[in-house]
Image (cartoon, rainbow, N blue to C red; front, side, top):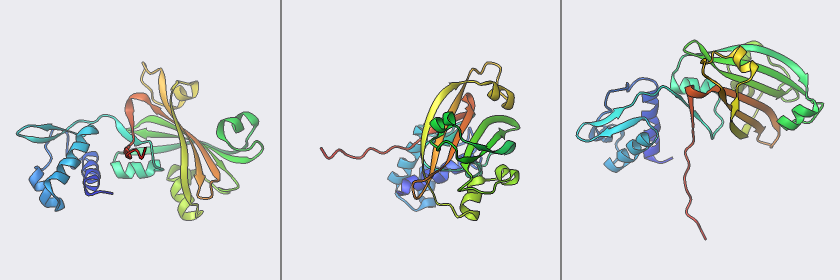
Length: 240
């Protein structure tokens, strides 16, 4: 990772955690250059990236103004657990386990999830509340052959920490699909939605271990106006 990207991420965390508050200015370019011991050009690249992602606005003669952000940012690429995002961004959140039980995958579920029909899975449903408002509905299917034991205390905390630290799983990659879906009766029952809400953002993922074995299928349904999903893309020069 380049210096300006490291500085970008450090300042981003500072903004998200309230170290740099909205409607205040970041330290001057010169002060940032001294703090990070880098060139002015490196600082300017980091600030330009912050501005491109909606964190700051450069005001001539005054500096970099921190903007208000009412939406939470969720990364599209990478495999980051909800608990890790919460710790990184510093927002207050709670998790409620709605249900946890074992099921057998039938053919329709097999077509949807990628699991073979007839295999046993944990079916885990959780809600995530931010500022005491339930805005995320997570629905997971987990192979019991890979995750033989699971309880509500683990599910309420961090299943990925349990997978990696207790079960020794090496989680490698995921295939993701993001769609705008119509609200379901389940969404309306379990989430604290706005009266005018008619759609929800659905993120479906098939998650694999390092031996390319799928062990998890998850659908995470997010209230539309609470989140924004982002990625960082780099173009590689064409060799043609």
